Length: 238
Ligand SMILES: Nc1nc2c(ncn2[C@@H]2O[C@H](COP(=O)(O)OP(=O)(O)OP(=O)(O)O)[C@@H](O)[C@H]2O)c(=O)[nH]1
Image (cartoon, rainbow, N blue to C red):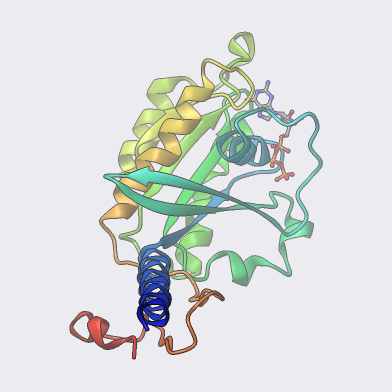
């Protein structure tokens, strides 16, 4: 008679463990936050290379003009929390932007304005990129960062740091001068997005779409935590 009992106990334990691990999975998924960062600026300033450097850890072998938008994502840890940065690498060329523009500016959490330090016209375009953000009613409170890229081309630098810093100050933005190409200066690329991650960490949470794990025990019913108030969270499993 003992055998079946202990067997049944073993089954219950497995069930319980399965339940607990499923709860952990669900809690982790529910806690994960995702932040949308748009990277904008003239064509050819290096937006694709900067996002590629941050998400893939290297300079791309070759790039082509972005059509519409490219997405890259990277998980980063900030104060022991894993958050996902979703970078929207937007097209600089007007003809490749038209159809997508409305999508860029929806639910944005941060903006990175990029110019090429060797090309004055790309710096002079910055006010019009800021105006475009304003036209799309981007919240003034969201973090904005100004980035001068291609600093490795020292002999050709056309925009000196003082000028860029004045512009950044007048728009209450931090300035980063960097290079997506140069491995040493690429540390700054990391700094750009980690600075944003720290700023975003304290902004309002945005949950990932809820995906229920598939290995739940049959007696567990899943209710998304997203629509629940914090006080109700404990009642989500029945
Ligand atoms: N020297 C140097 N070249 C760079 C750097 N970043 C990008 N480039 C080069 O600049 C050119 C344009 O780079 P992209 O990243 O495609 O530029 P983009 O701003 O995404 O251009 P669009 O997609 O047209 O908006 C490419 O030839 C890159 O190799 C950099 O930090 N240093």
